[in-house]
Each structure stands twice: as structure tokens, then as C-alpha cells.
Length: 192
Image (cartoon, rainbow, N blue to C red; front, side, top):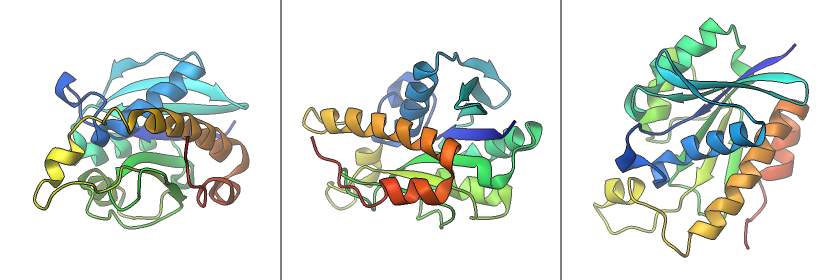
């Protein structure tokens, strides 16, 4: 049976819950909830195992804080013997507007500390990433406040809708592969 590692990036702690930077946690939470899984505290991550369309998914939310996410990803990838092409990392993306998602099989860290840590630990940028556009609507010098801030009331309905689309995207990735998933989701502008 094919096995996949689905990684949601975020920071542990109540002060970070449901911030833009924690969208990876939120999406993996939704995926696990939809498939009636349950997270447990384990080594370097909260972990849930679910089945999607006959495939086994190991879903993790690293408990290492964002900047050390690579330790957790490498540990679980190796422990579960999951091939690199079956690892999908869900991450917030400043360079994409809120209306967009992008999934690709490779690509740089783009200045994202979580992705940089994963790249360092895996020794490559050649692994699938699901980038959730959060936009860059912040004053000069306020990037950290924006990324670690909560969604606005205006943004929230679209965030929820896009989160459901991300769950569908992950299911499609597992069932049909990267190329089909890219074709289906990458060029969509998400609006309510």
C-alpha cells in the first residue's frame, strides 16, 4: 500500500493558533477530521494516521517550532520509509494572493524558514509543496506581525473555503498524483 507523509507547518502554542503562519496546521487538522482520524503527541510532532482512497497517510504537525520543522519531517519520512515524492508540505505563502493556491513538485524555500529547515534536513528542494496564498497586505517592516497575525473578518470566509479546497487537493494528490493535481488546482482564482 502506498504511504504518504502530509506535513502541516505552523508553530505550537495558543498564541499562534489560527494565524496566517499556522495555516498548514489548520489544513492538516481539517483533513484528519474529515477522515475521522485523531492526533497523538509523538516524537517531534503531533501525528495522525488516516486512510484516503486506499492509501495510508501519516499526517504530522511538527512540535519543533517553524524554524526547526526539518528535524520532524526528516524523522517521520525516514521512520515511515516514505519516498520523497510522497511527502507533501502545506505552508503559508506571502508571494501568492489570498485567492490562490499553488502545488509544485519542487521549488526554493522562498525565504520561508520552515521550508529552509526542511531543505537543510532533506538535502533537497525536490519535494512537493502546497503553498496557501496569504497575500502581502502589510506596511513596510511589518511582515512578522502580518504573518503571525490572525485572519481578518473579511478574509476568514475565503480562508475556510480555500481550506476545504486544500483538503480536496491533498486527496487528489494521493489518488491521482502531482501532475493531475497541479492541472486541477494551480490556475484557479478562489472567490466566494
